[in-house]
Image: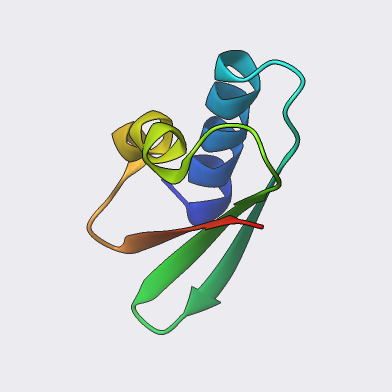
Length: 68
């Protein structure tokens, strides 16, 4: 599964879990690893968002969380 597919799945799960909360889920490709960054303002805390996104983790994809 590609990072874009993983990001799409994360977006869908976040949308279903936190109705009305806006998230930005972006991907970056680099070398052997891909990065997915999740940004949001207010709403749920990092641990809560991480628990939703964690099911999509792979050993070649890093997920970063930023609640601004």
